Length: 355
Length: 269
Image 1: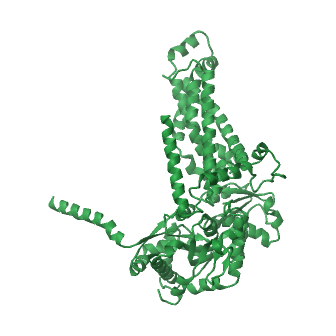
Image 2: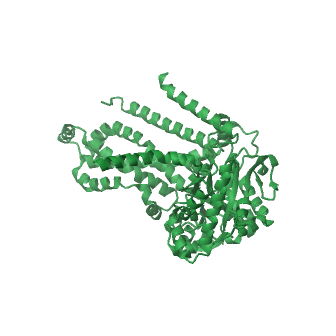
Image 3: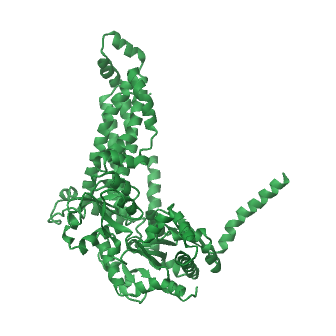
C-alpha cells in the first residue's frame, strides 16, 4: 500500500513536472509525410540523432507524421514550425497564402519517382481525347504538361481528359479498371502500377531533372528569432548525420531498413525507390545545384505553371506577386512581395563542419 | 428570435477569427473575410471553369447566362444527376423491404444477408468496387447504393412489420390477392414513414456522393472542393459548402411538403 502511494506521488510529480521541464526549452515541431526523400526524418527521430542535436542547441524538436495535404494545411495555419514539401507546393500553399517561407534544406530531387504510365498501346502522341488519372494541380500535372511540351505536343494538352483521382486510391483504380488508359503518379505507387501486365512508362521525372525539388521549409518569422536559428542549425546537423549514415555507414543496410520502416516498406522496395531519387547526401551537392544557373530557370517554369493554373489564388494578378529570393540576393518577381526564400547558410555551415 | 442566437454567435466568432488572422497576415487564405468570400462566390457563380469554353463576350452576357455557364452550375448539375439517380434506386429497396416484411419466405431468404451487408463499410473495399464497377459514374452511384440501401431495406422491413396484422388478414379474407394486399393496403400505409426514413438518410447519401467524387471524377461539387483544397481556396469552398447545405435543406423541405400533401391523414405519434 505504502509503495503504491509512493509510486503514485512520484508518478504524479513526474506528470506535473514534465510540461514544466519542457516549457524551459523552446519547442519546435517538424511535420513530415511518407516519401522516399522524407522518410529519413522518421529515422532521425527514432534513432536518437535528432535529440542529440536538439540537446546540443538547447531546444526541443518534435517530429510528427502527417498525410501530405494536412501537413501543408498545418504549416499554413501556423500549427507547426517546419515541414517537408516540394518547391511547387511551397509556392502555391504557404507563399501564396502570405506565409513567408524559407527553404533551409534541399534534400533531393525526383529522378524518376514521378511517372506517366499507360496501357493499351497508348503513347503521348495518342493521349489526346483519352482519360488520364492524376491528382490534379500537383507535381503530377506539372510532369504531364512537361512531358507534352518536351515532346512538342503542347497544343494537345487541353484535349486530354483529366480525371482528378485521390492518391490513396489511384493505384487500385488504375490497376483494377482495365478501361483506363493512362495515369500519372509517384512511387511507390508507380512501381506497383508498372508491374501490371501491358502497362508501359511513357515519361518520368528523370527526363526533367532538378525541377521537382524536395525541401524542408521553415516559417521565416520563426527563422528570424534566435531560438529559431538554433532550431535550423540542429535540424540541419541531424539531417546530414543521417545522410552520412545512409551513404557511408558500414551498417548502411540497417540504417536503410530503419528508414524504410517509416512507410512500412521492405529494404528492397526502399532501395528501389532510392534508385530513382537523386539524394543530396552532402550539403555541397545541394549548394552546387542551387548555385548553378539553370536553378532559377527551373523555378521559373514551376512558378509559371502555378500561376497559369490559378494555384497562386484568383486574387494574384501576376506571377511576380509571389516573389522568390535566391541565396545570391537576386529576386524573381516584385521586390516588395518576396514570399519564398532559399537560404543556404545552414547547409554551408554543415559543409564547413561548423554545426 | 431565440433560435437565431447561435447563428449570430457563430458568425460573430467567424468574423472575429478572420479579423485577427488578417491583422497578423493580410494575405491569409485559411479564414477569408466576407469580402474575399463574396469575390470567391462571384468567381464561382459567374465565371466558367478554366477548362471550359469561355463565354465570348463576358461583359455583355446577362447574369443568368453567366450563371448557367459557371463552374458552380456545372458542378451542381453533375452532382444533382448522381443524387437523383441514387434516390431513384432507393425505390426498389423500399419495395424489397416491404415484401420481406409481408411474405415470410422472401424475408427468410434475404434478411440475414442484408443484416450482414448492412455492416460492411463500403469505403474500405473500394478496390473491389473498382473491379466490379470501374471508376466512372457507375461506381460513384454504386457506392451510394451499397452504403445506404441496406439501411433503407431494413427500415422498410421494420415499418412493414408494424402494420397491424388484422388489416392484412382482413384484406385476404375479403379476397385480395397478394399483390393487392402489398400495394393497396400496406404500401399506402408505410409510404409516409418510408419517406421520413429517406429524409433522415439524405446526409449519408450526400456523404457517400462526396466521397465518390473526391476519389475520382471530372466534375461535381466535391470534385471542386477537393481541387480547391490543393491551394487553400477557402473563399470558394465556404460558399460551396453553404450552397450544398441550402440545396439539401430545400430537398428536405420539399420531401416534407410532398409527404404532407400526399398523406394528409398521417400524424407522427
